[in-house]
Image (tube, rainbow, N blue to C red; front, side, top):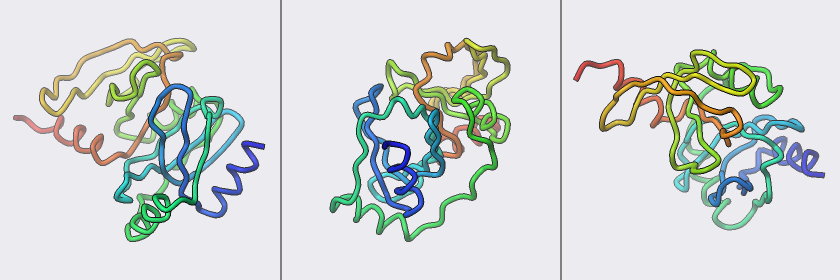
Length: 176
């Protein structure tokens, strides 16, 4: 039932919120693609502003809700702006989708199961079935790049094309 309902919500362009078992804050936005393995959403904040394209595993979903006054207000605000063109990629397994997004984007934000507030804006430089080797861009305060190994099982979701993420990548290219 979940997949068929999500497909209906996608087709009707309904603003929804999704609560997941790996984090206590819901994701709000518009569905872009849904499979048995992966959900792709355009995220918006409470002011209806675009926050990037996110991908996570379908099995993480605990609850989906829509249609309340808050959703209607956010949808009204979101409809006043233009969302970036979608990246072209195939939605397959979670790992393959991560790798495809990484190849087609300047950077990718990797969020962890243990703390979604902590994330790395990075480039994936190497990978196997269990690990990603990444090169981080650092935080705005330091813009200090480093290499890191990241366990695939620790990834709860990824984001591409968020305004904050794009700003960090732009700043890291500058000499300060």
